[in-house]
Image 1 (cartoon, helix red, strand yellow):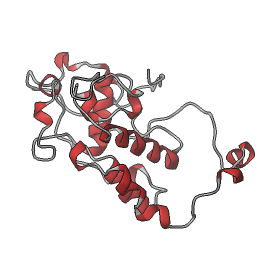
Image 2 (tube, rainbow, N blue to C red; image 1 turned 90 degrees about the vertical axis):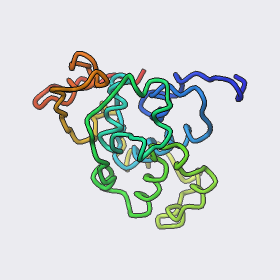
Image 3 (tube, rainbow, N blue to C red; image 1 turned 180 degrees about the vertical axis):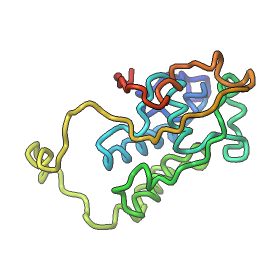
Length: 204
């Protein structure tokens, strides 16, 4: 696709798709990939997807739960995205990533914050990310020749069904405006009802 023209927003596996694409952005750059890297980076600490959405709307809801509901104050151009006015969520404040990634060091949390910035203009670039202090702290990266399936198994990696790591915060949608999710019953919200059973599906 010509980089000067519109591009598809249906790219990348949903769990790793950045919020601007979930809002229907047709113009984007490498910053979209950096969000995906941030999601994978967080998964290395939890061994589970950080944002395991069941649908595009649910994906946005899970992202907003952790990173906060996007506004023009926190993301100046968000209201220009094609689908921003079609979807609305309650006002949710950002959660400290230390609650989501409790095993991460301070440097790792700082890198995750930079990679998972909601506003793509404020997201760290790949070049700056490579020079982040996280990559200089112990333990240093291992040479690929030192890795083996046996060492992976010893580290406790498993192929068990992924579990959401996002804390449930059930919103109150009574009295929601027309800009809020229609019918007050999207599948996104059903996942967070107290006592509901989780039925994780694949990200496709």
